[in-house]
Length: 73
Image 1 (cartoon, one colour):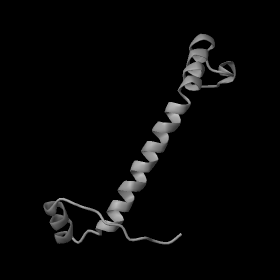
Image 2: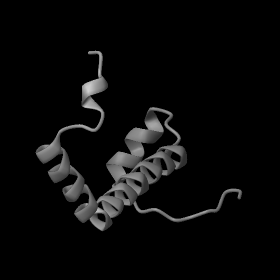
Image 3: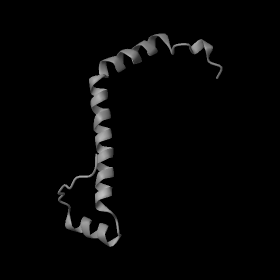
């Protein structure tokens, strides 16, 4: 898809520290945004599927793990 330019506003001290350490702020920001998006997608999925998650947990609590009798450990 390529790369696009965006504007970010950072604390001046944070930007200066990153520059002085030779850090690539664009790549760091991109990595942080990727991670934040992953966390948010997971949160939204759990929220949307909470009733199914609860129902499965309740079933396991009542009946145990499926095929537990066949486990060798």
